[in-house]
Length: 289
Image 1 (cartoon, helix red, strand yellow):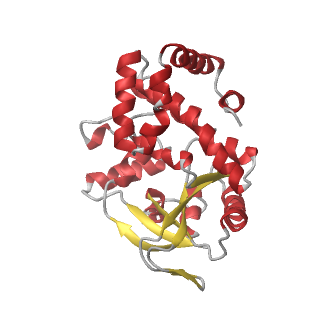
Image 2 (cartoon, one colour):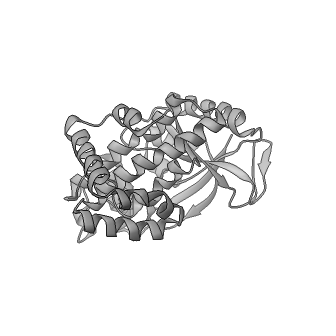
Image 3 (cartoon, rainbow, N blue to C red):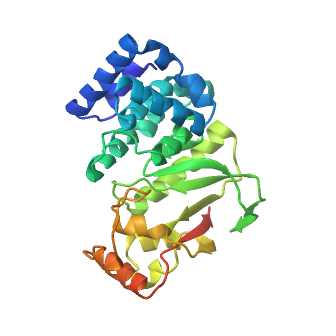
């Protein structure tokens, strides 16, 4: 599957598609040599790729966020070849990069250019290119090494063995039925394409911070999501602040004081009061089948 085929299926607006198309034409016609180095620079690791990316952006005049988006779209041609080797279909490939346009709109809210926010999503989307993460319905599932020995409901994995880390993409509905359908797809997917039978899902997220279930209704989607997990570790950090009050992943707008945080819903009001009391909005590590 070629770039020209899949780039039209990702949900870019006409204006966004023109931005990407213009960059494609410019890179192929004026900066072909720099473009040809993208794969080799990517393979050197994130730090080396970042150096190449910023130099390329400075040389070409293309905004770095937008250039990052374009180069990753181009590199996904190689990723699709890996999908083909495993027998994974085009529909799953498209599903796994449809988030590119959504994330590329985030910087616009904080006065930055369209494309991948640096450095967070440059680093994050390497998982998609490297075939270690897959979006299967509502949730994303990443192949990781277990950070510790884990046991739940009669199944166990040892520290360092493979398990599946669960991630929750933003901007979509978050219903329990959709999540459970994703887990079912993941069990089938990793058994079929990775020969995995002993599957334990783990999730490290602000949504698994136990305090949330103290202040949210039992019917809350976050509370219901959390209750499906056995919490095995709690981190008393500020991990939840950006996700509760901002757009998360380091993209929230900076505030001068706690009183500047919004309190336009019950969770934000409770979280703001907790911060006033000098307490944390941390994260939890949970496991489930």
